[in-house]
Every structure is written in C-alpha cells, then in structure tokens.
Length: 112
Length: 112
Image (tube, rainbow over all chains, first blue to last red; front, side):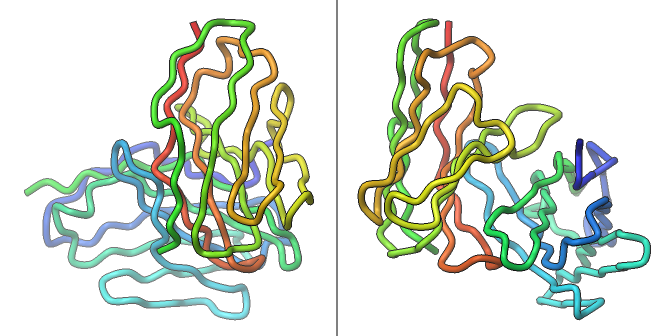
C-alpha cells in the first residue's frame, strides 16, 4: 500500500523554465512533508520541508505547496538549472512518529 | 550535514551467507534508519532505532536484523542473504523525530 505516490517517473524541463514535481498521499495523519534530491551514486539530500499548519514554504528557487484537502503537495523550482537534474523524492511523517514514508521518486532532467 | 559513513560501499556475496552492513555517525543524532532503494519502489524503511538498544521494524523488515550498542553505530544484518536482497542500502540519521534525516552515501549489495 503506497501511502506516498509520485505518479510521474520522469520529467523533462527546459533550462530557465519552471519545474513542477507532484506528490500525493493517502494517509490523512501525515503532518510533515519533505523533499529530497538524489544524484547517482550519492545519498539523498534534504531540500525543503513543510508542516501541515502551512500551505507554502519557500527557500530560494525552491517552493513547496501543500493542499491538505486534496492530499497533494508540489515542489516548484524556478528557474530550473542543469544542476537540478536528479531524482526527487517526497516524504511524509506523522507527528510523534519517527518514521519517514517516501514516494517512488521522479527523475528530473533539465535540458540546456 | 551529519557525518555518516557506511561500510562497505560495495559488496558481492553468495546466497545463504550472512552479511553485515555498518553505519557510523559522528553527530550524536538520536534516530538512525536503514532504507533500501529499488527501482519502482523508492526508499523503503527496513528498521530504525530511537536510541541505544531501542529498535523497531519498518515496512520491509523480513530477513533483516539490526543492532545499536552505541549511539554512533547502527548495524544491519542479513541473516541469510537472498537474491531479492540485492539492492542499494542507505543509512540515515535524524536529531529528533519529525525533522529532516541525513543520509549516508549508500552500500550497493549484490547477492549472487
């Protein structure tokens, strides 16, 4: 039972344009969400997070939006740069629970 | 970033043999995790620890055991390796629950 879903396995975006990565979840108890970025042969690195009390969090070129009623979050990257080419994972957790549940990942390719 | 070292980085082993992967951290983080990454499945939690000698199962714990005798070390043991355990294994640590986790560089395990 996949509680966190990333339905797009891959995405290609022109350099300089906006990249939008999507994530859906089924567990309404999730209240903390994170995005990770992963390059080949490296471990995932934390990118940005959002708690359920907010609907938007911004950090430089990266913005995460949370729509609790739709159980949907998205990561916007603008402008997209070649170094953004990587696999992006969304993850979620329940307050008081130490475990993170990850999605299956979306491979983002930025076209120069 | 937390100093997380996984060893070995690569290992090939035969079916039926026991294998132990080691995770060492230098940040004194309370929580430690073992994940496996497989195509189409993203990152799945095997076991985690919330303190010395305190461990619990994740979603794919069958065939794996863990031990944490010191804050800095978290060992993952495959009791009798099978081909289905061929994967990339990641260790992660977190200072507190519901905060970002920091990942090691991964161990690529091949069971032949």
